[in-house]
Image 1 (cartoon, helix red, strand yellow):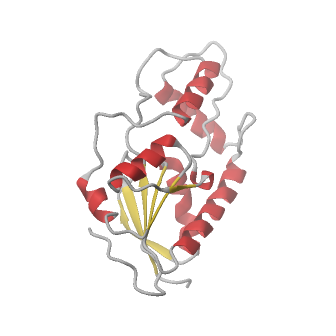
Image 2: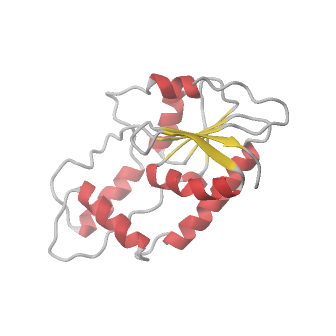
Length: 201
């Protein structure tokens, strides 16, 4: 799909992708304690993309002609936006950052990061946040992020490179603003969704 320029006074479309594959491998060992995983996640958040990949042709075609390129403030999202658009510098905003993954304090347990991801997301959804952003706060941020996209898409086509879970959190507030997902590519690395504005019902 090639995104055409937005007609004057039209909104969107908005294309929202997940970032590419990070250099830090969540499936690699060694197994970690919850404290070690917390440190691992901090490194993941400031890490870059793995170099042995390229942006998929379908994503590059979809965002080739967009008016505005956005990303979260994380390096993996900024680099994704750059790779997908052949070097365009995105406007990066922390409002699009990934929802946190605070690990539950499981004593005498060690798991690979990919397992801690699952445990941390489940705990976070049930109110566990350590000293970070809660699920309630993240939902409020998703509403703010959807507002940002809605305003940015006035008379423009928009591409956002962000994160798997937070991109899912954007779906409901965008729908409430009148945006319909017309292409759902799922949540894998480099996957993307396309939203078209149909107005509020």
